Image (cartoon, rainbow, N blue to C red; front, side, top):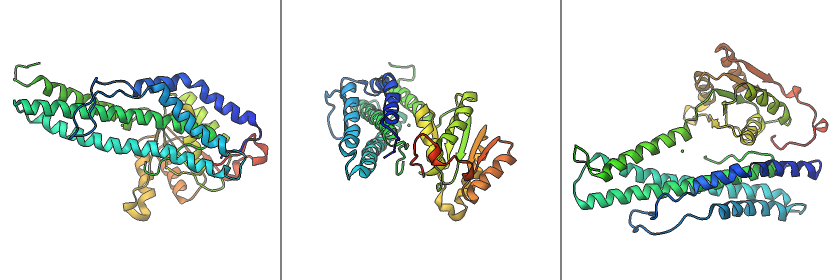
Length: 334
């Protein structure tokens, strides 16, 4: 759990989250919309009249679940386990959403195949409509789970000072086509557009990479990112995916400031070359600015490539950090 010099620091962090309550409520309201009067959750089950959960109750349940873990274990011999328990709760939302996404994608693939092969029979029309209902229902459930996961992730960040990072972790026509088939094609097109927007965020890319050990001065990294965002307000953050050190500090800053993040993980199929190929691919995306913290030869290679590409690079060394005793709060990013 993140350590604070006094309760005021934790209170300020919780107040910061409370200030975003209207945004959280809006996110829940949007994610828990009723797409249809009927729902369908599997191919074999009949459509059913089942409502989505109440968004306010869902939001309150997430806050109660995460908050209670920290409140009950605080100042006890089990306090150190609160972070792991809360991480597991956030990760359960994430993994469940991914499982639902897999079912949604399978149903969408079937819907696409049906939409491409016209059959004038009534059986085909019914199956097409029910498959579309299945995709819509699963999409709605996924979006609701993702809203709960994002909310739980924010609560986790406020309580621990760390960002949550998942383990693995978007009419009859002249041609005689039925109305259902036209609707299916339109729905697939809209769904594809939505997924592209989710998984391919648009905006100038700012790259951050650094070592995992001996880094504690997150305020130094945050100050640089604050300055960049003031000049590039629509920036997208790209990190090398480390769960500690500079990358974790940058991810925490991104969550705090609502900046979309892309984790560039090395492809282990390439063996020892993987991190360097990852660096090369990041530079090919033409980042507008970069922050590189002292680490290993991987960071040195990235800084060199960025400079060769003419990208402004902010290099910070471990020795540039202020001693922990001179800072308001301690960090758990190391």
